[in-house]
Length: 165
Image (cartoon, rainbow, N blue to C red):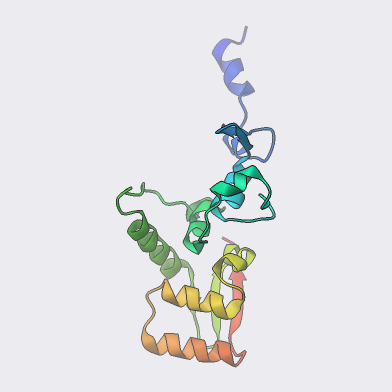
């Protein structure tokens, strides 16, 4: 016995579907894990898919840090509405701005932001100065704050505080 209930409980948990193993996706005769797609193809991470790997031809050539915010955990970083295929860039801009405006804050001498941005800093620039520029370019920040925060960063007077969500 047991019927359908027994079969349902035998199914893997949804979170397991995205695990590295044992799930692979056959795309064009090549095997991809969820991690290969997320980090290798969409984030162009050469440590996941190397330059001699035949799948490397599908890696995004121009990195777009906005993608990181919506691919990675925690799940509240995932957009709740689908993108319009005719306006993907504009939709991604709007959601990035909304996300950063709600989760990044500036005080007199610090910037507070989600830990996930620290984890993937290299996707946003080579260093904290480039990360700050990227953040300021993708947020609604008045010119006075922009200038002040940039000057603090240039003099090492800006404290970076990363928090877990």
